[in-house]
Amino acid sequence: MHHSRLSSIIIDCRDGDLAEAARFWSAALGRPIREGAVPASENYVPLDTHDDEPVIEVQKVDHESRVHLDIESDDIEAEVRRLEALGAKRVAAIRTWVVMEAPTGQRFCVIRPQRHGKVGPHANEWP
Image 1 (tube, helix red, strand yellow):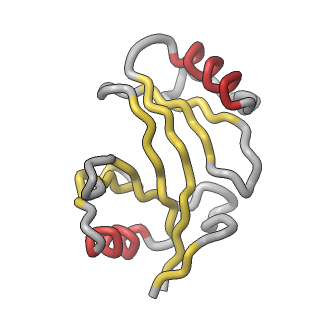
Image 2 (cartoon, helix red, strand yellow; image 1 turned 90 degrees about the horizontal axis):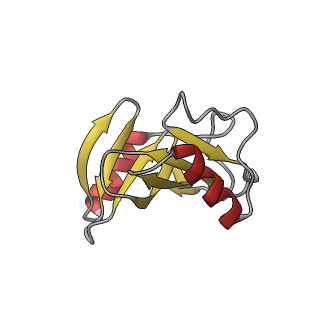
Image 3 (cartoon, one colour; image 1 turned 60 degrees about the vertical axis):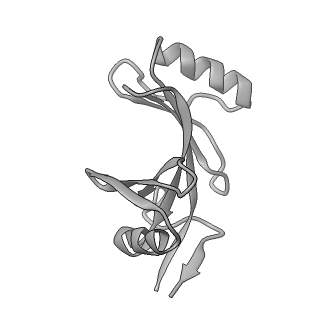
């Protein structure tokens, strides 16, 4: 048995200044940039969200700009297999997460729990 849930909304930005992109999305979504975030030294700028909301991060990428979702799971491999059974395809394993593609073409990631080392509230339980 494992658990999973929608974890994160990642705003992928290919061109431009990451700090400026984070400022735009912070203002657009009404969520401040997390205190201490240093966009010059990292590829991610997190916005502050409540523990029962998805994590929102602005990410610098080399591919086209887009928005992608992350699903967090306490058993990444079991969740990947479950999603493959639904028709998703495994695209790549990167460090601690797996990039997948839905049957409809959208890319998303299966990742480790993002808050407090466990899958957050409202998680689904899978056999």
